[in-house]
Image (cartoon, rainbow, N blue to C red):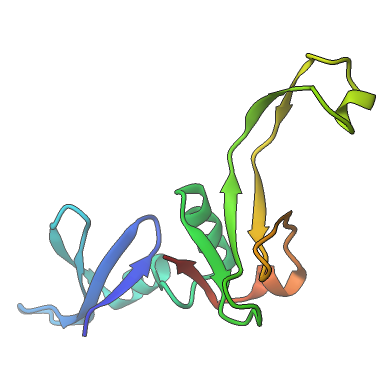
Length: 140
């Protein structure tokens, strides 16, 4: 059975034993360009996690690559996180107008936002349980 995985890149892989004089368990791995290789089980599983059971670190990598991510354990339907890239903003309205003169260019740093259940967007900060969870998944 093939399954999609995420690590340093997204791959499709399936269980396969290596033929030859030193057979060992592992995975056949298909890359986005169609190239297929073989990886030992321990090496593959240290580098890749199934798309529906990623660590927070893999979820952050996916965010940086433009993917949307969510936790399987979240109760709200349709909730997900996305990365907002850094940008330059010219001050033209409050509350920034009360802090900077009109027309001042300020830099917004990249940050993570959440689309909420009711369709709103809010800045997001990870909780301890979010950071330690292994139920992160890519939202298509």
